[in-house]
Image 1 (tube, rainbow, N blue to C red):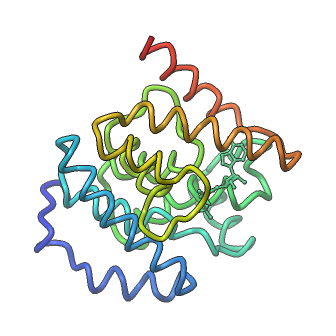
Image 2 (image 1 turned 90 degrees about the vertical axis):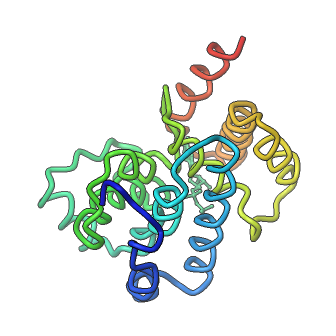
Length: 197
Ligand SMILES: Nc1ncnc2c1ncn2[C@@H]1O[C@H](COP(=O)(O)OP(=O)(O)O)[C@@H](O)[C@H]1O
């Protein structure tokens, strides 16, 4: 899977498999993220096929049962941190980064990390990690206050500003909902702010 070429990826087979793992709306979202990831790859000079594949599979563990999560944790010795344990909104990214290896035989580290960090982000993100994070936010089906501004930034060569704005939105959202904030997003935000001063 190293030299991906979209003709070489069996997109139909991947989508058919995802169709058994995801609800229809989530599959539609995943296809939209994949398409958006291609657009962003054109703008930021990344491999479109890899971006498409990462977008397609990024949410594959979103509907895993507790039993499935436990079995991945045991099989791969995954250390979920206290915020991720029993929290599928956060754990599906970590578990998904293993599931794509097992289910789709994806071994590309860049894709694996893009899936792993697509919810919280992290410090020093790769281009693909940034592309998938933003594509997840701005794909055509997304509709929340401020999404058009994020699209404008993302499609106009201001990827880091789009990310910082997204981290700000998410951190505010988490606070408004009285939830714990995962520190990776705070670190990701601060890292980009410092880098972009
Ligand atoms: N830093 C964070 N701390 C705590 N929860 C977070 C953080 N970042 C994201 N989340 C949780 O993850 C959710 C978004 O996850 P995401 O995979 O983008 O879901 P969806 O695709 O359904 O919008 C947020 O609504 C929030 O509950």
